[in-house]
Image (cartoon, rainbow, N blue to C red):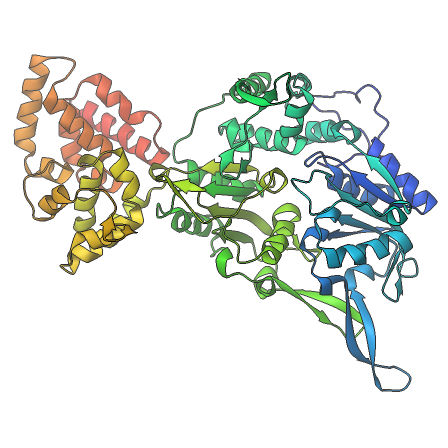
Length: 616
């Protein structure tokens, strides 16, 4: 959220006239002005997501147009990022001498304000460098004032759940002016009102104000922004709530004893009240959720997080959809094998500065989207810390990544099928970087069409078994990745059990394979292909079923289940058969084919019903 000062007032649906008490700025922007004016180091503490960093970006740009904001995210600094000793050739003697090179951002060639963000999250070595800057406005042999610095600020959240340290050295603390700010000290309300200018947000602000302080901190202004963004797209509002350690954030009020309890969970109530205040629905889900949120991400420049079980096809679908939307491959990074040097690296330059070079993939003006695969399995903390700058500020080593259109992080949940997965934890400050956070189920990933298109009839047979012959627990064990292995092993004549997940000590996933063996041996089964081969007999059975009962019989239920479970490519292949059979089903069953399905599938059924009506 950006702050607003000296900007001409632009009326919007929330504030047709400036809100009462509006002065063009905020308490935080006034603090920034005061520290710059008196030349003191400012320390700003406040909860995550209230607009601290954004206030600096907007206010410095508007109030000091001849001054640059140098933003240094301390959480991802390494000891050699700020200052390094390197041999350089002396201009007078021509000899090589050892000099301390400072990061090029601190020599912008104009006045600048230095903001060290997440200052408590830096490691011990970095803390000593930061304290020299904060106390003396120097770094090594360099005087920041001589380089053009007119203000130094450190900011962070004091919560030990999100930081690495606390400052306790009085000699250091005596060098700074400290402001503790809350959401009411930034201009987040007027900023959101301007961003969603056709919506009257006063009702939303009323809902937020009605919450107790602890719950308001959970539903930070940044998260409110994400909830509104999802509401604008017609998505479930809960997608705007972050996933913290794999679990959706719950808006749970505290009891009198200070503890939270399930009986005080107000998540659904609060989101429904926000939806009502906006006059929009709050759906439980939407058809084709993954592809729809990915398209919204590219369209709106979002960061999104997809969490789902292994082997369900998340990565394949993300890369395919991004490719379709951008017309080019996304930048792909697998976090377990990504080093800091794969993203950027500091090198000495001829002008005596330390320049951070970005990886080639991030340069250039072509449209880009980044896929961070296995997001919660980083190789090391340093790489993940660098990643946090990109997801938060859309920059790397302080340099904007040109034409970056979307970021997609993909991860597994901490637990699946009762087993713990080796994934790392996050905190709420990290989790709230994503505009939309989805928990993905296997049925949300249209991997079946890809399997059929790639492997043909054998894949169709395995999918029929997966849909009809095993229960929900069995389907959870048989991922789309497992189905692909089953197909490949069958084609090589190998035992199918080897394709299932091996659990150790001779034990495989607890899923019976007898029915699959029967299907692959072409024994009598019931799928869309089988219906097509016996369409006359099934048509006769449905006619008898309709005469017996207008509500349907076992025969109509069988046909209905086959049609409902068939993939779109199969329905299109047997369109004539589908038209003949669906015409004989009870109307209540036909109506279900249009409910909660993707647009292309809905379009197929509309066309089918129209053709059925013409033939009738």
